[in-house]
Length: 487
Image (tube, rainbow, N blue to C red; front, side, top):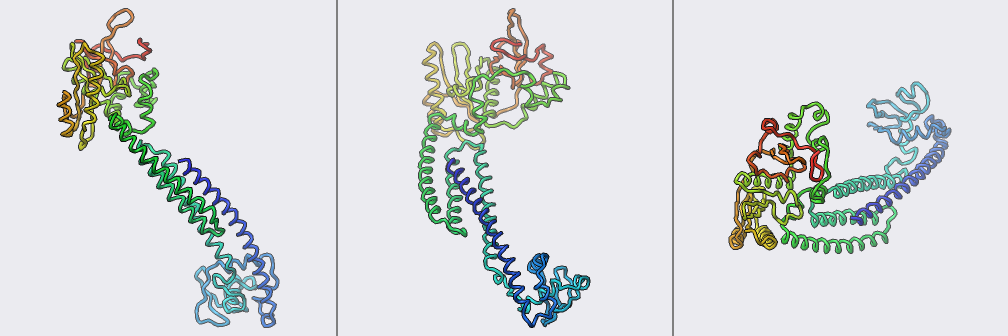
């Protein structure tokens, strides 16, 4: 990546030097053309047979304004119509036709000023009394300059596009590292080989530099390809050992890092917690019940990344298990990277069930490596808790491969395939204890800090769908939490 950026910077510096050279050359050629034009015009106009011709006599005077007038002759689109003679009809750029000779013209300019107009001078050129008007007749250098300038402008536009492409790559949001390395590889080669061609074919070729860059490109690309393939194999090996990595790399890297970097985020004020879902005006104007309900509705409807979709599915399965009388620890949402494949830990008496949940898109299949991960987690948990009877369960929205099913059967892992996510009551109504050991009836929204730590096990505790329903049951919203107590 650094090599690609350095290459773009080097190319930009080279093009800037060429632009400066082109500007100086343009200025030099313009001055040369001006001097040659005036000298040639005076030489031709001094011929005896033209001494009485007004159009040529004006050339001898060569006033300061004459050269700009002469340039207008060269750049204006003028067309001489047949029949051609010493006098002729000349069609001006405006589309009007004038009768012109070397002595007079019917155009308004000559009629008013009575001095040779551009049509008269053009007629003199056309009949060969001045110099050749062919594209390369005035100066081959002018055409070369125009071609060089056009090529340089194209190179500048290509460079700007490549810089935009590089910026796009740097902003890449997907965690597909081997693919990204390959893309840098292709981009680097395409851009720099085009630059090698430019160095070889520009007006002042830099053949030595072109050869050096070409050798460097081939050497660096070989190293990049080797590194990319090595990383691809290494990543595949890690994903085989730790299947959760496949889910981790499906979300933008910044979000993924923020999600798993700390198990417990810093406490937030209530307005900060809800600002993702409410505008400042809504937060200030709406009464608490409507404020909380609107935030909850938007939380449920918002677009979620694959990690958040997984957490939502774990919470749903946990809700179903709590309804069946299990005490549920939402280990995946709480422990995050340290969950060891235990999204949920269910307990009822001496029985403990470690549950792994996978909410995958239709068409995907769970393979045996996920089953192996859960089986290893069950073994480790049983070893640390010999007094418990530990088993594993795999719950997913899709099917499992035949090998995964066979392995699960041999490893005593219960399978619950094709369990779809469905809407369920999201608000947890919990009865806690304050410092005076008094029961405190509190409801928690899904975005609240302690939501996943709350267990619904007591008779007075429940899930509800609306804030109004929770308040009607005598529960209030949870306050900000500070390490074991509420404020």
